[in-house]
Image (cartoon, rainbow, N blue to C red):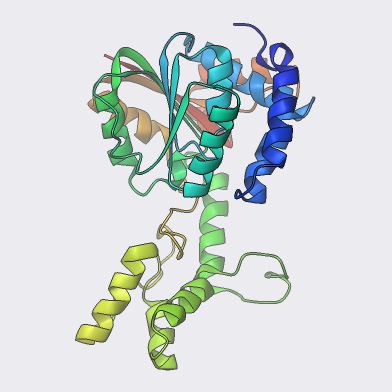
Length: 332
């Protein structure tokens, strides 16, 4: 494959300028496209994708690519520029879908972005030649259901690439995430830890959300519901509170260390520290040939390709040291 950044450098700059003037999308959307057009960071990002494709022995040209948990869609754009015949992009957030469809239309890219649940797509069976999921599986509501859906939509011989930076096989990474969850639920809630501009703790965000939805509730009820709805968000959070007001029975979701956390506003999971060996094992049960490998990054240092190769040879030992991982799977 040609070098993606060098080949499409001018087009990426034009795309960045278009997104900068695009109305109705958040600043986070624009920032991703600024990175993609940046002469250093953009080149690093595109070479990272090319590295992952080489590891997976996968060429997207002429095929149908699924960008699972597409976010702002920069990888959808890269797959289109690499020569994919069609890119199906699915994301949980409507603003991302709106922005990506605007980009696809303006630049005549073969991308169709849809808002929906990646665990239950509208795609036909065995229609995808490559399913790509980067920095998303740790946020999925049900990653097992996502893998089952990939079993349905990926064609025999097709590839699935999963890349993520929340490596649950690494005790240090897992411990850092669990510490963050605990701090957001139990404190200490000090001015130093939660300075202006930092996201409020999940406990406080649940209190605020419950107060908005049930403005007539007593303060004591709001307080107790916040403490007993850890790990709930979105419709599930509201349903648990409504059930309390109807029955008088408090929800049984008091926080305990290790409990998976979800954003109160929409129920999205927050950086689940998944063990890639468990992901690969589940995929093998579902009919894939799958393996997990440590991923130490790419493009920042000329030594990283060698380090990644050594990490692949070391297997589980390297997975305990790396922040990131790659799961590569081929549908049988």
